[in-house]
Length: 226
Image (cartoon, rainbow, N blue to C red; front, side, top):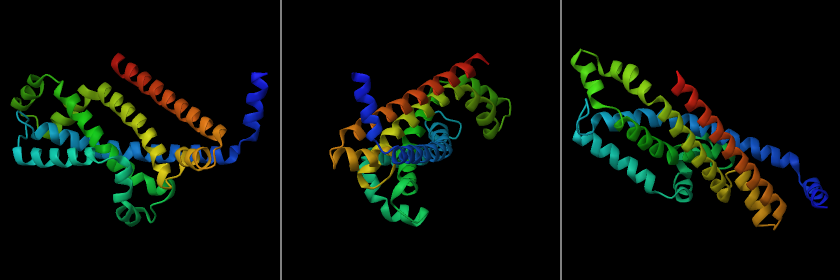
């Protein structure tokens, strides 16, 4: 009986719209993770290298960068979406839909990811790169051959955590026409009281998070074995 009821509910859903919303969420998530990683790694490295005891120690640069990262991290994402509307429109031509959600997703996620990178770097034994420095290695060589390889498993774990956080951000973006599963849940599940749509979108996002976590854990294990 329960199975028949579930089949009846699933049969009433507009799967073409749900599939499109899922693809939109994956589109937002993919680009947001990519750009957050591209921006977050150098920012995290710079925070670490310019901090006290770093090989590029510079109190002014570190303080300014740290301040900017903290400010961006302190802005609630729903507010960031609204504040960034002019910038988003300038960058991608629209502030609506999946495309218009990517810039605020990146700005919301990269400071968080940069702090994770910085914290991972702090776990490295300082003697390793100070020894490399005394042997004449350049800053770039230390970054490329020592720092990044040392934190690679932690880096993948940080990307996984950031990607999972971004899943909830994409859902939040639905409140202001951001597209994806969050938009579908709000328009149908909340505004039209179509509970089956709400439950389906939640289940899909839970599955998405589980898959991301599984892949992240798997990659971390593979890298640690090498």
